Length: 269
Ligand code: ACO
Image (cartoon, rainbow, N blue to C red):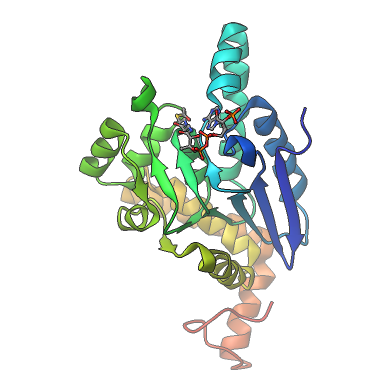
């Protein structure tokens, strides 16, 4: 297994994780998928990691699946190899969707097809205006699999999702933001500073509340109102059992100490 397909550093509470095959535009081969799972494992419970940012080395965020190593070479080995490769890719995207720490996609460049899996897995997404996105599957003759169809149906309007998938046309970061595929788009030169700013806002919040909140946003999307109400009561009670003191402290600092206002910012952890 290649050790260098994923790069990462931890600095001031932020784990900066990078797809690291710039010469292959960070397309995802089995080695990268295996390595990414290891890196996520290694970082998830570290006390010095409060937020994870996923970006790419070089000109790409990720050019999707590796058409040679993930598709052609794996298919040549038979169905067992195909299923294993799928499980490795889908596995780390799923792990990222339910990651213990908030996650931010920092889309610095190309983002194609299979790249929509980890894009959606990240809780927040910021793109460079210069980034280019496409569901290019249709350009080489397959449907957008690996969850990519589900991602655009969940995030975009039906008309935009259909246009995107049927034409395979590129959209830039600005259009991706207008379509709500990402939260915001801004010039590449300003991207890292903005992502750092957002990460620092999140780092000030109660970590148990962050995990409960990010899970709740994803879970309730598929529930009726009544089911969501019930789930949220139970989820908050489960969070209380992990961190009852945190919320009591938040109330104390506001009501008794008058040292902050919850409407204007986070309590002092
Ligand atoms: N799979 C395999 N190899 C890839 C991929 C990929 N997805 N993307 C890039 N590469 C390789 C190229 O074959 C090339 O390899 P080589 O140097 O050995 O010839 C190298 O990465 C550099 O790629 P270039 O095409 O030379 O880079 P350029 O900057 O000119 O173009 C671009 C970048 C537009 C991203 C182009 O590489 C491309 O179209 N890649 C495929 C994008 C794509 O459609 N991905 C699949 C989506 S569908 C899915 O993921 C299921």
